[in-house]
Image (cartoon, rainbow, N blue to C red; front, side, top):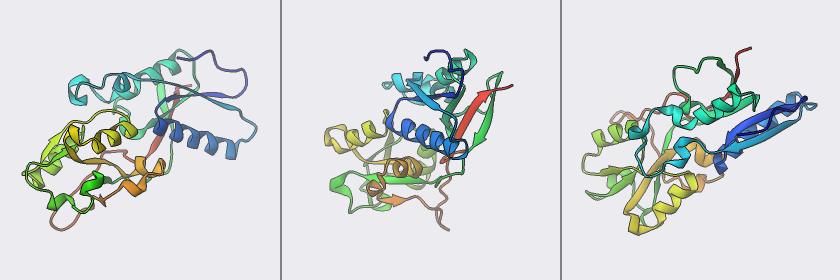
Length: 220
């Protein structure tokens, strides 16, 4: 995915989506605030999870779909570090690699994003049969429990793609469930209709590691 590392400085491997690049640049800036003398170059590419968009994630494989190619760059010594969303990192670490750092966690909660012509509604007030887009099995399970009258369907693609799909009414979605952290990092917080907060009536959990960034490197 990248050429051999520089003799001085670091090569950072990243996915090439806009959100991934924002996150990787944040890590780069954090490194250079402490070590301004270190040059950090970001190399980017797509993972299997980025390329295969016509199949639900649960049917393709595990979370390594968004990390494998970045890990291969590390193991092949084509990169020195890789930046992941922590929630995408498999529980079992690839042999020869470690997590060198986990950055301070951002808001870990989920958000409801309504289609622009439906923003006067909330999750609890959506009509029966309304289609809410999410590719997360966890989100589907939680929301189906509390809102069995709604339909929850897969929606794939990066954040910008999913928002475009939402706004095209021909796709049938009236809302999406997305991570607050991703929307805020991309300065898209204005799209948030409501944050799914736990109440005495409803418990809304969030993914392990959601909202945090992980820096992976070879095990020296």
